[in-house]
Amino acid sequence: MENAKENVLMKVKPIKLKSHKNHFVWVIYILPAFLVYFIFMAFPLFNSMRLSLYTGDGLIPDIFVGFDNYKELFFNPFWRDRFINAFKNTCIFFAIHMLIQNSLGLLFANFLASPTIGRDIYRTIIFIPATVSILVSGFVWKLILNPKWGAINIFLTKIGLEEWALPWLGDPKLALVVISLVSVWQWVGLPTMIFLAGLQAIPEQLYEAASIDGASGWDIFWRIKFPLLVPVMGIVGVLTFVGNFNAFDIIYAMAGSRGAPNFSTDILGSFFFRAGIAGEHPVAQPDVGIGASIATIIFFILFTVILSWKFLSKKAEQ
Image 1: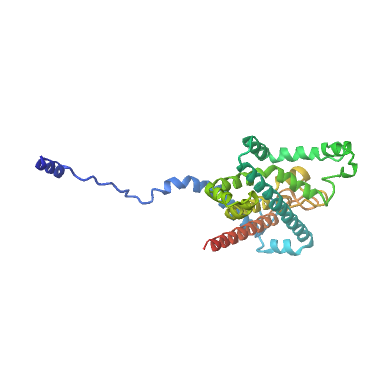
Image 2 (image 1 turned 180 degrees about the vertical axis):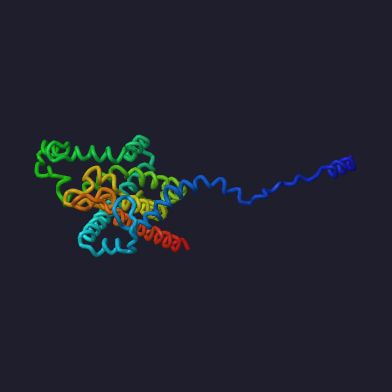
């Protein structure tokens, strides 16, 4: 029997795995995604940088001027004042989202992570505004905030708070804050879901051990949840920064392309639209070169901040 087994084993030939002759077959799988990215992302980006060095009438500037568009943007009082105002408003817009939206998102996520009755219903209610079109929600809120027949002022008047019935979108001191809060209402569901995923990834054993040691819910949040959520907070902060420095829709829906009243709600997105597409000049003649310069500056602001965040996050992990 042993000799028969040895003869059978000797007749069995080892199976050789065939290796691919072409070691670059993986290119076939990434080529479609690469083409889509190049056509719709990379090419428009680099073409915008190229156009920022040209000027001329029409949609395609054909006169090379080098960095004159940037000089015009930074040193011509007309463009400089508009740019500084839009940049300042964008920073305020971002700060409100960063402080209020993300704080509420963390609060809601902590609430949803606990065993609460109707948790799925609350989760749906918080996330539903993010599924609504920005233009639609902006138009609806514009009606609600109407100073004459808007629902908010009517409600305030009926409960005896007539002095609080204000022109919410007509006061330069209030308009940007009000629009920012509307945007917070719409997008608070996104950081809530991200924070909730981060909380659910924390092992339950840590909570149990802390409870046995007599830690309160407040102690558990600040000593366990908050430190472990710091990387998630960094991601949420970057997403908030990118989203707000690219914002345009909500301002356009509620205040128009000129950032009414008196440019008090004008941000970099609306300033770019007005300069390069609709026209900032009194005769509404767009300057594609200036618009491309604004877009390029926005890109480098985003690139610098994100690169700095990646560097600091890697340094913190070491």
